[in-house]
Figure (tube, rainbow, N blue to C red):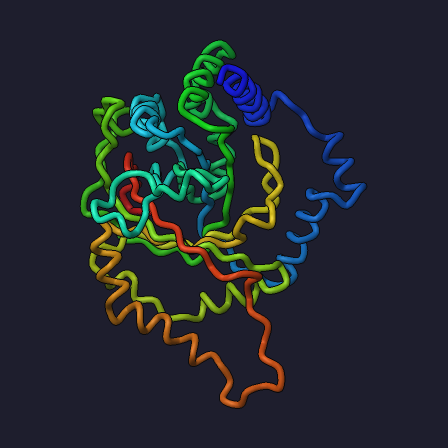
Length: 339
């Protein structure tokens, strides 16, 4: 246990070095480019994306994935509730939520999905929507980021990391996305914040109350099919805004150019796209799933098929079937005009 905690702290320190700009990786970038490594491939794919007219980014979404040790979930949530952050006051901020993974057959809709402990990408996700990527970069390089991650001193940061190591298995796994086809409603009431962060009582024993329900679908789309995949979604009719309890929708496209700040190259086991729909609660999601809006949106797929079948059926747009994942969120923070 002691050894694993020390290894985790070392990994977190490396992540912190990338995040604060302590480590420069120009040599590794040059090596990767020269060898045709992941970075070179990412740049090449990005250039291809421009040429192939992928959809324009509407938002920029920053996530961090955590694997919380069994029995430590309430302590993990308390650390988030008690942190210092000016997030809601920052330029370009749109929406934040701390998401905990849930099982859909859990009637109480509260607690950790038992399958999440076997998932290498964890059972909690911090999810922040920024208006533009430059807004995220400004936060990441500023004092507000340092304050939220343990203060401006190395001692304060190490102290924070030690506490993290007691509740986490492995280091956090950041992932960044272009938010496409963004839809959101104007909230009836914006959650109250104090100095830019939620003021919520957390005792470290009980989980925080659920404030929203999130339905995600993970898609594994090769780059050669990216344009067709995005166009299929762009061409479908959406009535989400007409549904009671709808909060926001984003089709997340993985930002493969993201590097540094603890980011690892994306593996084949990770989705390239994730549809993310936020609902007021699980009942609102169930009402949509069982209603006409869902049926109409998914019936369009049949209309896209040609009347005359080709000699060979078209290849699927994804390399394996989509994987649904569900969360409930807490510590929600929203801008006055929503996500």
